[in-house]
Each structure stands twice: as structure tokens, then as C-alpha cells.
Length: 332
Image (cartoon, rainbow, N blue to C red; front, side, top):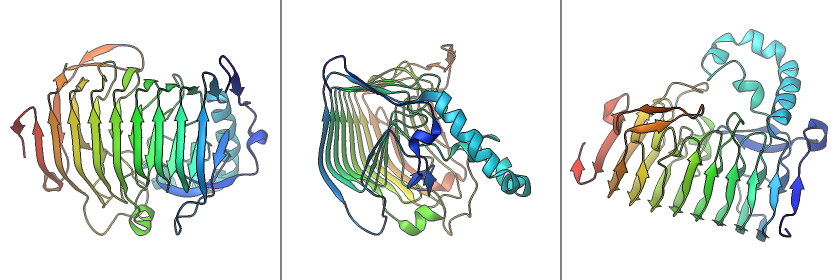
């Protein structure tokens, strides 16, 4: 990308057809294509695309929420009989739009990719998540700016059942999580059983959005996460680890150092809990938060500042949560 150059996606769903196999909110499904599509999804195999370098001083921008709404409207019409006959499933989701919106593409979609560098770019306004890596490994995102204010589910970077991910010197202004670490959703995530592991988030900053999150789709397991020298002070959720008791799987070995945030949260959530439950409860264990500055003040998506509990450890059932230390104090 040349300096000041812009690769601009349209807001017309037809430009992102035919749909491709992808994964969204923890389940493989046919989705509209992303603006950039790298690799072919296959949870039974390793990488099928290698050595990709996307860089420069320009911008890669998507069709935004206009594209998202158009895609979802088409999907809602396609699914109208299914939605009408499955009211309990609809009620278990975050809201009535959750299921139709799952067909959206991303801005950059990495499927079964290996050795990828994305550097020095501004990226944003994807119709959903902006950089999503699935069944991929050895990914570096460096010195990038991610912008998605006004996009519902507008996550910045989502490592999903992927390994060896390094995110450094990035800034976030996102309509949801800055970084959201995932590994599939029950029951499919338990069966595919491909963990996300070895993730480093280093020297990153948020000036709008939810902060850094693990979950809630973590049924394949998440382990070995290091968050270091990050500034999430201007965020709504700070450092958040979340799941539901139906997920199964595990989150373990998470280390956060020298980081500012409104709060640390390890808790259960009730939204997007459709799908058959796992045979076992999730296990959340071995979390260390050291040299943290916890402000107790969040900034929500309406740019409003509110007070919050700096430490929120409330997983239901509590037996799922073990070994949590915050600033030298052991809580469990």
C-alpha cells in the first residue's frame, strides 16, 4: 500500500459473493466473503497458504455497518421460517439480530494461513470483525491502527483456534473488543478441539472500545497468553476473560504485566449461549495480573465515563475458576 493509498470495499453484498466457508462466533458457516480472503478453511488440516506480507502507510477500509445491515437483511429473509420456528434459540442470543448477522464477512480473513505479516497500516470499517485468523499460525501484526466505531461486533483483531500470534505497537478505536481471543463454541469447538495458544499483545493502546478479551467462544481451549505494557484505560471492559458454563474447554496460563485498565474481569456471561452444552464445565485457571494500574473508571461506547469494580471474579459456577493473582494478592 502506497502512503495515503486507500483500498476501499463497497457496501454492496453482491460484491462479496459467492459465500465461502468461514467461522463466526465459534461455528463454521457459509459467510459473505471478506474484503481480503487469504487461505481456505479446513479444520482437519494445516496451512494451505504461506508467507503473506501486507504492509505500507495506506488504509484498507470495508463497507462498514451499511454493508453489515444489508447482508443481515438478506439473511433474515432467507432464515425467516427457521427463526420463526426456533424462538428459544433466538431468545438465547444477545438479541434478535444475532443469528442473521452471523453471515457477515470480515475485513481481512485468514484461514489456514502460515507466516503472515500485517504492518504499518490503518485498517477498519469491516462489516464485523476486522482481522480474523482461523486455524492459522505464525502471525505478526505490527504498528497498525484499527478503526471501527459504530460497527456492532466491530472487533479489531480476533485470533481464533490459531497459534503463535504476536500483536505489537497497535492502536485501537473499535466498536467492540480491541483484541478478542477465541477458540470455537460448543459443541463444535469441543469436537474440533483446536486451541488458541502462544499469543502476545505488547505495547498496544485503546482510545475507544471494549479492551482486550478472551472468550466467550473458547470451547477449543486458550492457553499461554501474555499481555504486556498495554494501555487500555479508555475502554469499557479492560482486561476480560469470559465464558458460559456450557462452553467446556479451558482458559489457562494468562499473564498480564505493566498494563493500565479500568478493571480485570473473569466472569460468566449469558449471551450467545445457543448450541448444545459441553459434557464438562469450562476450566479457567492460572491467571497472573502484576504491576497493574486499575482505575475503576470505564468509558462506554457512548463516550460516557462510569465507575466500576476494579476486580470482578464472578464465574458461575465458582468451582470453574482457580489460581488468580492480582498485584500480589491471591484471590482463589
